[in-house]
Image (cartoon, rainbow over the protein chains, first blue to last red):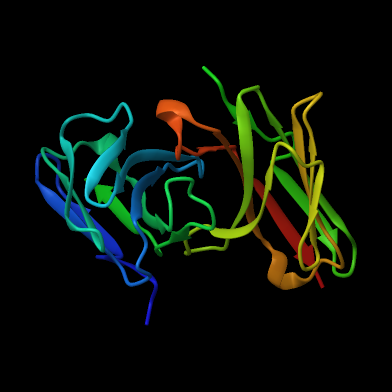
Length: 113
Length: 115
């Protein structure tokens, strides 16, 4: 009964492809996030949704499009993948917008070749 | 832009020793700080947090100290165990406004505990 689950855990794809990463949380939290962690372990927020509403949208290429069908799900779709998109993507959720005691998923390691 | 950084990227200690991980932040508007632990192949895990109206907060074997004067945050781990080996991140967030809920993470410190 994983709290925040992401699929797939690993994703290897060619440049130019379109891919999606799915995230689901069963904690009843109102807020969900996508973070990107680069090869130097630096974590940076990409998006935040509160009750299906986008509240944080960092300077992310518009090839990245989050979609929240309901407050328990926040998926990340990436168009026209580039080599620089290779990273580990983490989904997280928290009860409120403050990220207090946020729960992170296991991450999706995306490799673009 | 504003950023959060760490002084020591790596820290090696012996089992049973106390560990201190430091973090400097530059955003004077930050009023909420969190420490996360990330084990290999896993997502970050919440350890402890502190608000700017506090100087110190204690948890189980961990203590966070906040010095707003010099914008410095530290995480102290007592009686460090091999299971504490991980990457530790500090993160900060402003109290309100349009950036509410946005966490800025520091670089990360690799803690290695030797048996």
